[in-house]
Length: 117
Image (cartoon, rainbow, N blue to C red; front, side, top):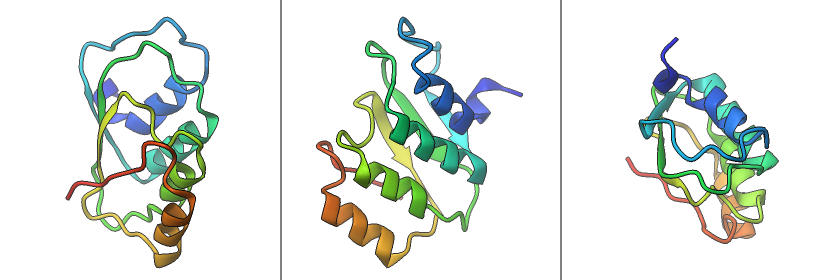
């Protein structure tokens, strides 16, 4: 499996707290699927990202994927997404009104959250 195709599992590894010295992986764009959406939500909740890590982009590869848990995790986190998450592309994903309301009510972390596409 190519590392750029396992964005969700990668996000869990990055947020595990076991890679504190990691600064970069040599490339910045990672794709993820429905399982990866859950993994990224778990990583947002864990919030033990490497402190010196550089820019990273996550892009959803599947359509019609439920994004509610990821959006709730971002909203419930004090910080939201890690500062090094430069772009979170979620084309074709599904959001419920409840998940959006939760994000709005919680302020989306200090950074807030954005979705392009």
